[in-house]
Image 1 (cartoon, rainbow, N blue to C red):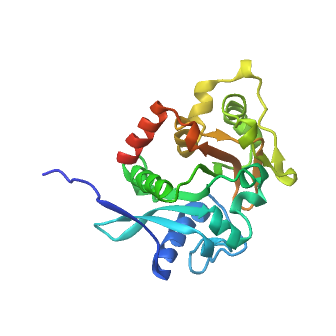
Image 2: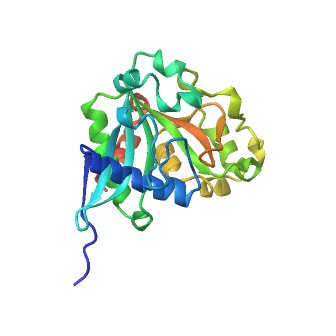
Length: 254
């Protein structure tokens, strides 16, 4: 008889143990696997954490067979950001256009899966829970930084340029990378773009947001602490057309 595969459940972390399980997975992915770091990372305990964690909702994906936390999404609504004093990504991007819009905002971050669960249905379960969260809290605009591994800009010229030329946010949503680590994404002329290569070199999470009608802010941000090159993704739920909404529903249901 064939193995039916894992059964999942998704919830918001409610206990210290659940939060630490999320932070431990983040440590495995962002520190051990990708070479990141940070001022509050606890290497002895194997926990990736920062000063914003107490203000976020931590969405965790649990494998029912093992009770292990195998996926994480970190969520910060605008009301939570007020308590924190800012959105997390405000250190990298000027978010003034979004904050002053008067719309309900949700910042997404620290999305990751255990390596054994990538390429299957695990991410779809997180998407479904995220969609329900967005509906519950009447969120209008989702945003957050997403990362390319490494800081070798010439190696990332094709995908960054593709994002700049084809997926730049409209002016009302076009947040801009802060000057200290600002990196232009206009690196390859449109006529010299190799779209197939650019898409292959774009992380799956970024491509998923693009399929849903997401767009990117102006400029990338070089995050040396995390060994990443970040772009700011913005998704206006009101701008999603019917085809995209059906795709969203499909991805949620997967």
